[in-house]
Structures are given as structure tokens and as C-alpha cells.
Amino acid sequence: MEEKSKLQILTNGIIRENPVLVLVIGTCPTLATTTSVVNGFGMGISAMAVLICSNIAISALRKVIPDSVRIPCYITVIAGFVTIVQLLVKAFSPALDQSLGLYLPLIVVNCIILGRAEMFASKNTILDSALDGIGMGLGFTLTLVVMGSIREILGSGTWLGIPILSNFIPGMSIMTLVPGGFFVYAIVMAAVHKLTKDKSTIRNEFGCDGCAMQAECTPEMKAMEGKLEGEA
Amino acid sequence: MVKYVLIIISMVLVNNYPLAQFLGICPFLGVSDKMENSIGMGIAVTFVMALATAVTWPIQQLLNRFGIGYLQTVAFILVIAALVQLCEMFMKKNMKSLYKALGIFLPLITTNCAVLGVCITNIDKNYNYAESIVNAVGAGLGFLFAMVIMAGVRTKLQDQSRIPESFRGVPIILITAAIMSLAFMGFSGMISV
Image 1: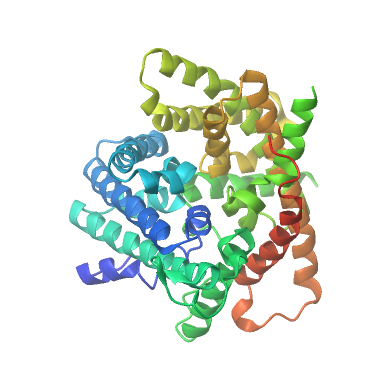
Image 2 (image 1 turned 90 degrees about the vertical axis):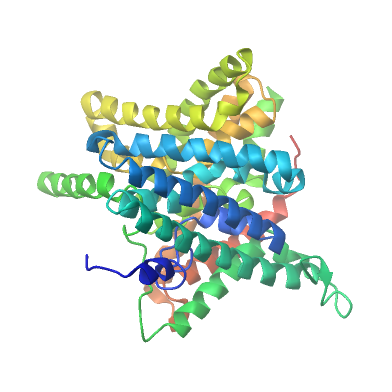
């Protein structure tokens, strides 16, 4: 990997390696919590807080954690921070806790966080990891806010609760329901494809990059395929 | 008995995890490119869900007993990770043919939010032990069902359609999922358990 400047690390996650739109990870919370801007923003900030803390902690512990049990160690660290965030949200913003519901504890299995721990924090210094966490978190939050805005404006005609379209046309409530989520995600992703076509950093197919279990899974998968072919 | 049947139908059709609740989307989009992969992943997820629920439900009772219910997330995810690892080791040693079919999907399941999701839902809904396990099996079957339909559609998509360039790859899969979930909305309100 070539040396990157601090600014590059910070902006990497916002556009070039946007976790949601380019790496296609963390899709469940993206779809589930963007029914309104507030929910999307709340989810983004919660995940960002966990991401920054866990990146810092894992980077600080990277020389202590033995290689063979690193994934369970990372999961423990992340789960600890998720519990902290969960309790904080419950205490200070019960309404947000209600609307995020199940997806708040599910931050722990958000591939973005484990993926960054495995791919970045375990190899880089504490400062770089914190910057990477901030960048990735911002990229995630921004995407959620954009999707939340589209779905809220079209779905209920408001933005942050301020009436925008609802005075002229009734909201298309399908946009805040499940199909609308998939649809808006597809449109936003297609727009990003179109805009960044020349730079072509977008993957057209799902691959293993970005997946946290890459190191665990890929060699085994290859060995397995080889074995199957050998027998056939 | 009727209640168990209702829970299964509700989890497969009405509250289908990928298509109505946004759980387990990553494997739903990522592994559904071939029919064999979808079936393998679906069965592996069903199996792990049932097993994880069977273990995490008593653990929650234990946590409640000591008044440390807030450790739920930490305890559950660790148990699931350990369970999946154990499962893989056991299958590798004793059930070679099953391991060949399902083994490669197991490492991916730890980070599948549907598994942790079903464990937490069972606790939130105050299901008893039997209902929890039936609920987990139903959720797994629903996931398998959605995966199989998706794989069927995607096989056709690859062969014969002319997709606009910006929509190639992931976006068209999302559009497909949107139309499928629109169809599944027809089931909503059919049963409420």
C-alpha cells in the first residue's frame, strides 16, 4: 500500500471508498433507518461514534492481540462500544431509541466497523485509524442523510419535519416503506455510477474486498473449490 | 400447535427478513448469484439461527437473574461467534459431506445481522423457549425462500436482459429486490402474531 497523506485518509471514506455506495457494505441499517432524515442521521452518528472508538482501541491494541483470535477480540471491543452508545441513546434520546429499535444493537454486526478494524486499524497508527474512522463515519452518515432526505421528501412531503411538498401533493408513502428503500438505494447508487464513470472506482460485481471476513473466508473457499474440482 | 404454524407462516411470508424487515441484506444481495449458493447459504443460516436461539435464550434468563441484562449485545455476539466457529470445527471433523456443502458459508454468518437480529427479537417479543426456536426456524426458512427467488431472477437477468449501463451490477439487483418486496407487501396484515 502506498503512503497516504492524512487528508487522503480522511476523505477516502467520503467518496472514493464510500462504504455504502462503493464498497456495498452496511446495507441493512442503510435501508432500514433512512425512513426520515432524523433517523438516518441518528444511525449515522451512532455508527460513527462506535467506528471511531473501536478504530482507536483496536489500533492501540494491534500489537497485543494475537493474530489467530483477532476477529473475536475485535467483536468484543466493538460490542463494548455499541453497548455504551446504546445506553447513551436510551438515556438522552428515547425517541431515537424507539425508532431505531433493533438496529441500534445491530451496529455490532455492521460490516463497515469490523471491516475497517480488520483492514485499516489493525495495520495503522492510532491517529491514522481515528482519521479513517471519522472519514468512513462521515461517508456513512452523509449517504444516510441523502437517502433519508429523498425518502422523507417523497414519502411524507417533509424535510426534518418541515413541510416541503406536502402542501402541494400528498406524500407517496411507498417511499418510506420497504420497496421505496430498495428503490432509492438503487437510484442513488446508479447516479453515483454515472457520475464517477470515468474514474471507475465502483465495483460492478460483489467481490470480497470490503468484507471483514475476507482473510478467513477466501483461502478456505479456494481450497474448497480446488478440492471439489479434484474429486470431480 | 396452531400458534407455531402461525409463527412460521408469519416469518416466511408476512415478516420475511430480507424483504420486509431489512435483515440479512448483505448475503441476500451478495450470495444470491447462483442457485446452489443461495440454497446452501439459506440452509446454513436457518441452522445457525435455530442453534443460536437455543443457546442465547437461556443465557438471557441467566443475565436477567443477575440483573445484567444490558450485557445482552456483548454476550450474544460472542456466543454466536463461538458457536459458529465450533460448528465449523465439528462439521469439518465429523460430517465431511455436510461441511463440503455448507462449510464455506459459515464464516460469513457471524457477521450476518439476521442471526443476532432473531436472537434479540425473540427476547424483545417475550417468546418462551419453544416459540423462540420455532420463530428462528421460520425466520431462516423465510430467508431461504427469498434467496431462492432472488437467485432464480438473477440467473435470468444475467442471460438475456439489456440493462442500462449505470444500473449494471448492484443497482439492478436492488431494483429486483424492490419489486419483490412490493409483492411481499401483499401479505402484510395477513397474520399478526
